[in-house]
Image 1 (cartoon, rainbow, N blue to C red):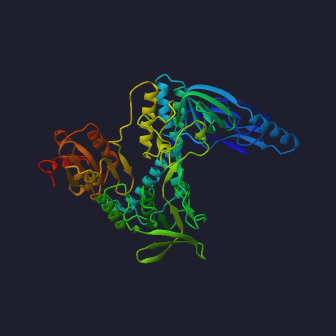
Image 2: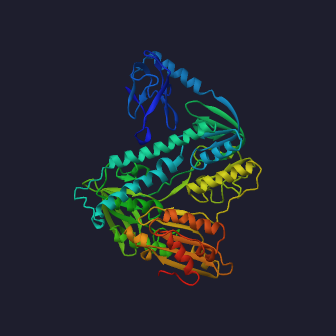
Image 3: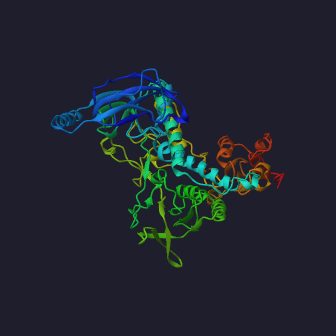
Length: 561
């Protein structure tokens, strides 16, 4: 067996450090063979099987590249001696190491690892527990990988339209999904290495394994090495998992979830997406930009129901113009396999039963809190009223005074940046500071084509609360930068509370929405009025000028529309 160097992001090289074995040494899975220094810190290369070191193909101090073979391993046979060793190892696994720490964080996603760094920088002794890869769902199979796919699909779309810009790319466009996935993995690995580096830099002890509470102060960890960890304070940040959906036929091999889709190296010619929420619509535009025939089946009467109807209507129009087939008010009843191996999705709407035939099916229904194996009852921690998430107060404290919960596991708002901020609040509270969460100005971004972003109150909320409000809406079609980008569709909407004169909400659908929302979030968080925005100088030509125009629209009226 060959043992190779893992990916070093960006095509960079590393330098071989101490080699911990010699030819003839017996090793077992997980034994450290060599330390390799990279730009993101030291990386351990470990044995991937039990066996004997046959050859060492590098030297201490030599340059190391991604994929380079470092060792050759002769795999051990499972003879009687080996079986005896395995039995002895099994007995050893029943023992555990005692660890005491000031703060234990269970989960190394964007909530957990940010809380760990923030706490360490404030002088707290931190132990971070993660059973899989650092970075959690967001970094490994969520936000970052899907955005890498989004970028690749956008490049594909722009190449198809390049003639409009005077660039003739020819007719030989091909999508290499294997390379799309390789690039996605390179970005992911780069960021994971960065988090590992930050753990070392801030003296945060990282332990791998599954956590389960023994009491309100002690957690048992099952992994390669077992632990009993006792901690003064505990933060639960175990995130979420893909929700299970009870649809007959969902176990067919051609049915994918979002995690499967991010590793599928074969681009289908057609796909049916079940669910018109954030995940479903992001993948709908990804696949359509790659040239795939896409159908989206949504149970509700519109797409992206967490947004105002005018935004939902605009993204539906954009989807249909892109060639995406939308089926709302439709319930999937079953998934079957045709004689030719194709997927047949049956759905029912007001006009009756319909069939959709495609190569693949993507189920994008949603996610739910990951409570698996935690045994919270042994710590006395309560769930919320619906039993869907850990119950917390505004300080992220559970009903047990020294145990906190943050991120998706609380099921308050399933956004990575919310989890990170909740982690900071929880640590502040542990430090004795009077901090608490404020959800008034939480930005939400959806990476469709065009992008969508919103923050603050929805117009529907203003109506429900009987607020005396005013709306200003400005189209990107009047924005010079948007026209140069050939992205004139969409608009920005600002909402003002007439009584206070403050901006209380807004939404953007159009180019650069994911970047523009930060300025609008600052305005709402700091209770700015439209006058304060109009008195601010915005750079020209930029898409940010639509915010300036919309602010004028709340007063004398937009200047360029």
